[in-house]
Image (cartoon, rainbow, N blue to C red; front, side):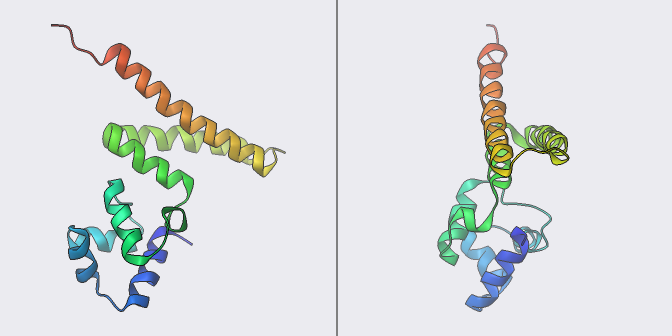
Length: 133
């Protein structure tokens, strides 16, 4: 089930309107509507944390590991970094999809790949991100 479907079900179970939830989160109603339409994920972890607290669920119950990774990348490196991560991760997943790799091995590979991506971004920032005076 998608993130959007999950938050819609949780909201309706509570009997809340989209406007009420958006106000509690401190975002626009349009932003919340986009969550339910599954167009976007929360841009920041603090919004996701508030959402989980409101609905009494964990982040893992709302999102899969890839989604949590994308939110983290977006916070650190912006929309461009998120798009780059989605492209790279998507290519890696496609490469692994047709093989005889066990699910647990594929999952371990993807977790390692995500850590490697973040670490390489940190190293590049340290090496190339400092501007000369």
